[in-house]
Length: 314
Image (cartoon, rainbow, N blue to C red; front, side, top):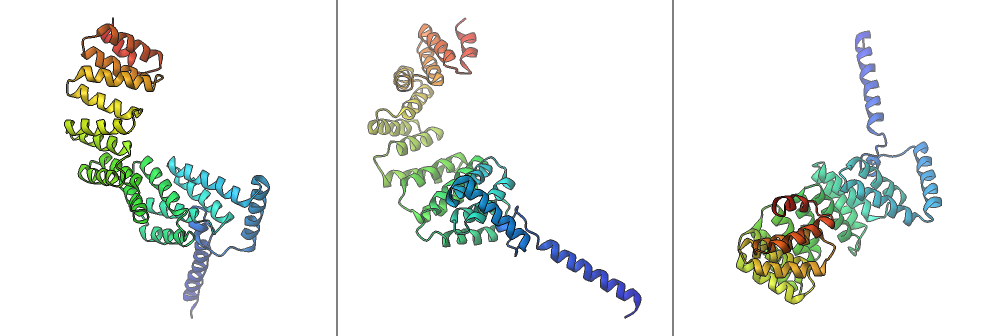
């Protein structure tokens, strides 16, 4: 081999060795620190970390819980790099905890790495044969993805829960809400109908379906469902408020006044509800009563009341 070829060969070999060494580095921005074999130095760092956490939190389980909370909070706040690091720390403390694997899976999904995400979902499920943590973690992921306005991802995660708990009304209510939020009104209606079918005594399900009817301008059906919700729970503020809004939309102002009067009795510290009552009275030609309610709304901290007072009560 001539000198030139020898130099090229040696350079290629050095680059190869350098690349292999670099590619095997511990990386806490990847699940399980990149799944590399750690040397003695890293093993000592890990052992010291476990020891410190045991002293600080009194038990490894307590430390795992704390770091999982940090991780989910980071995910919820869209600090995904911090979330990955905290899931790694929780995993390091207890590799048998399924929560960290579900966290890894969700973050990989956010990165568009669906095949890797599927593997980690399965690893989490393997650690949780009785699904005691699986559903809790999937709900955490749903909430985080909804918070990040990843509605499609939240729906996909809820579908995973639905496969595990096909007869849980809450899941269908949540699916209906997310479908409605994304403009999928037909799918939302199917979900709310299923929730009511599974539990016909749940006032929230009728309130949710009524809200969808309201969005779709099916006001008669909306009123009927709000009526049903209130019959099931006479203290359900949301149903009174929403029915009152429909009554304003359809020009039935006296009925709206009655609903908002009940609402403010049930929640007397809400400036927003007091403002709604004032608007209903204003449309019912009770200007003095409306202005009194707007003033109360302002005192209760409603941010819109002052503008309304300046327009209608001066």
